[in-house]
Length: 460
Ligand SMILES: [Zn+2]
Image (cartoon, rainbow, N blue to C red):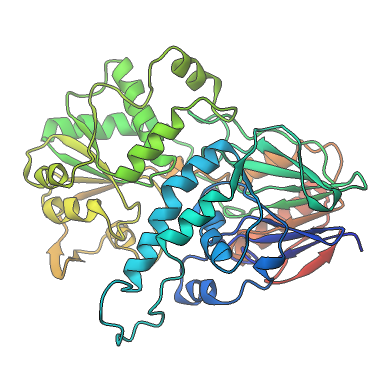
């Protein structure tokens, strides 16, 4: 059998994307993501991949979220030495996030401490910062839409997916002329910064995500909601804490601030971006690319940055970050991590969360068990740096800023197909979301679908 696919991650779960395509005996891995979430899921990162990294012939990345690239350094550590293809945007984001991930792994393992007798389940890191740098050396950038050869007589090209900077569908052609479209993650329609997901009309085989296969996002106007929160903050001289996801969400917030500034509606209060990673990522979003929307491209070619209104200040220095803890409002701090699981935002939170004028503004999903979730759930106290602290801050959320299509947007993108794929594989979702999307596709399109399980193999 000349062509096949096997699913080694994001199979009936959201994270750990790893899809192994075989073409005439050559092995092509699409994405190499980290499993995230529960302890059971995280433990999977320590298990063997389910294939031998030394026997892979190529790796193709769809986009730079950790659940799609986060195990690349482990792959290289275990002997992979072939090419890793990525869009330019994905390559740039990998350079920012993979070494950071390695450092985090080393810290978590207590790698540099002398206390190797600790009962930590994994006294060695999953991979090191040095492993991450080795992985970065293998990345070869490929332009959107350019056809590029793969082993086994296959070729592929990238098509913009509108999810985050550099995100793409991977369209793989086999030597028999048939193709498989690897959906990666599907973005949103009518959003600033990135262009809409590009319509695709034909694929014999299709792999799609299903993160929000059973949900609709709030359809409200993000700019108006932000305007309301900022003017209230200005009146009350509040500190606004925005736990940020460095890739995408931060740039979107800055874009909305800039729009309000242009309209003369941004109150006279500084906006601090207190995250080295968000700052580095914002610079990447300012490099012209085929996946940016036309409005942003025009701004960039005219030399104006939609992420840098006069109010915005990027903080690199840790001392300056600390000074903000005692500074009087009103001001806004955008800082990581996005779910308050660590990072500089936790120090800002410690300083301001007991003040009833403080506004904590969430811009994305807060997973179960995170500090962000506790605040959203209205817990009266939170535990920070060993202290139980009273929560008196106001909590706001911008649920409309998700980077993933909801089921309506997924169906809109699928409806572009001129003929049904022979088989559609539904990955990257929790079982209820997958079942709901499967039923909807059956009812509205009549397509044959499959929800593969971990390790499952299909001839194509
Ligand atoms: Zn993603």
